Length: 285
Image (tube, rainbow, N blue to C red; front, side, top):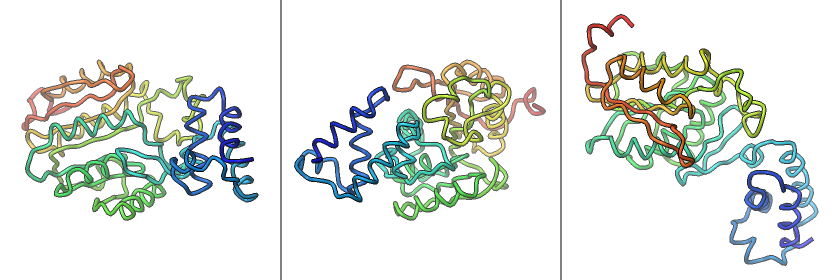
């Protein structure tokens, strides 16, 4: 078959998925090691037998539901080509909202930032790419993900430091102008865990106790000890958790609490500013 015929056939085979045309083109570009413009400019190209075999193998895996990002080993985030693997969540477009919010609130001077539960390093690397003078740390408890985030940093030539550890464990003595996180926030009983890409993603990066609120509450509580006066905490959360997160922020003494919506119009990012000294009623919470 020619390349044009391959494109059409793959789209037909992937019909019923969320984006059959895009998936077909991504798989073709990956196997051929060509840009998308090549698909349009050379419709008469005939893939080799080896290329055809690889396409068939990837198609079978995609039809079984495996995410395209895991098939290609790459996902774009904030115009950065990130290596991904089954050890990490797949960076999603909605998470770019946290980057936009951070850039709007960081001081003009060089700042200190930390991305907790960094996974691929997406948030930390995106911010470093926009603010090269900032000191950017990233923390991740999964050794495989730590190695992957470090590879992404080296390949993109973005000087972030990735530390192995659970949340604040490797940050003793540090304070930051901004803390960011896309933590686990899905309830273990949520039926969405049995559908779509999340079936293949690590449950430890998705699921949290107490109806998905445990890690969010922990981060809101503990960040007070790691934020500079006037520092910001930005958290991604589930579309039904905005009110609970805002209540936590307010109860624990944060100010300027605000929730931002994702590209689908759902509440997705809540942020707040730490004023400095703890209120007396909050000191023992």
